[in-house]
Length: 397
Image (cartoon, rainbow, N blue to C red; front, side, top):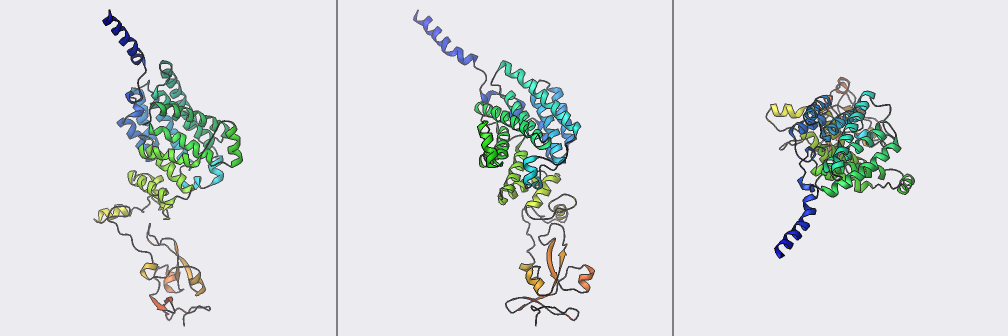
């Protein structure tokens, strides 16, 4: 009798645990593991090879028609391509307050937007099917989080429907909270919350107050911390988190952080013209014609057997002032010197800097060769030549 009671008691205690849905760490969906086809597809997106990456996603979706993440990836390919085409993922856009808060100038590609909407619609449909059998299904919540986050970006930035974008932003935030409560290691979900917090936190105080009464809150610092989690621990969206965090750092004048992230991206994706160009802007170098931050010198240096810029062992050439050569400025103008642009070689620190040159044959020929410097009266002076006579009060006597 006592034995029968004990068995029944044990059955009652274990019954809830047996009927409980899978815990967060038991889910083996594609969104939470490295799938080679999907990883290759996202890498192609980050190299701005959008059709090739989209092809990978379409093939994988055909083999996994019930997984909403395949359609999420397809939607991401259309959105990323349009954001890149419109120049949104650049410091020029982020540092322009009017464009950052109000959206692009012009209209997005209608065909891209149509296919983007169709992909997010299919992802939502499949996610809702999963939620019917389990209201806390992590795969479904992840798909809904990314779908709503991408739709928020498309509405507010590309189509300039700010109110619709805020609604989708709030929806993405709600799904992300449910997902992270079940699966805290889903770092890719943090980028949706982070972008929402940073964008709302960048609005004016009066507009934020109106949104606060509507239940919409934002904090720039919190938003950057959330995006940082994706940039550090994300899977498919880790590079996207890095570029977003780097651009936000440029807005907040955190130049060291921006340079670090953009250098990492340009090294990880050397074929990407976007990351190379943004890294060049962050460190103050001109953007070369081939889109590479180093002007292609890394390849030439490697062919010559010596380390190139951005690689271990490279020793950059010191600036002109450190080598005793004069460069432009008010003092040079007061001394009667003519100022010209020193073209230099691509990527050099002196490229495109104002350099003081005396007028003469070298200047007319476009040769960047200033006269040898000498010391005089506590400041760097220039040797006089027969063909050069300085003018003004600061002429060297």
